[in-house]
Length: 184
Image (tube, rainbow, N blue to C red; front, side):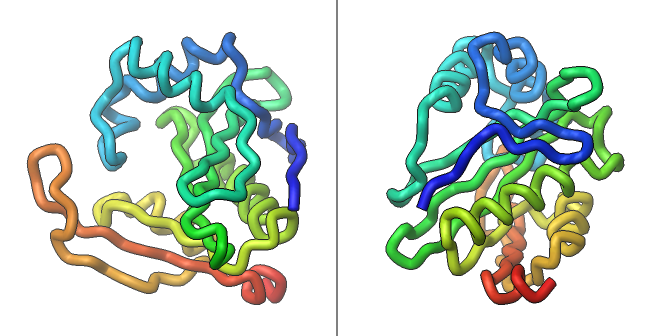
């Protein structure tokens, strides 16, 4: 199965990253507020250049470990507000993961939900996936609420299973199946 970009919603354009998105990605990935619950610390300019290079590549989404990350742009202003990602977990099992990262100034406005719905649609309807999960630090209550609003259910709470940024953290895993997506 294939997918097409860009994706347009009422308020957003989800598109491939461009070389000119470097400053926006730097602002996103170098912010301690943004990276607080992520698996990485704030990135250096050189690390962001490497990150951008990975986002520029055309990804077929048919092999374990591949990821499609798209820039989320406000249609009205052209402003970069964040990004959403689909990760291929197990291509043979047709399973993946949803991720999202947004600038704090754009939290609470429904942009992450609007963009995430489109990536779930892409995963289930265009790529033919069976199951999509969302994983997060248990302290990230805003993201947990978003996954619930997307129709995902809490499947696991792993207690102190990851040592991140100098401390043991709990991980929550949410999931949604293709038939649940269709029935929503």
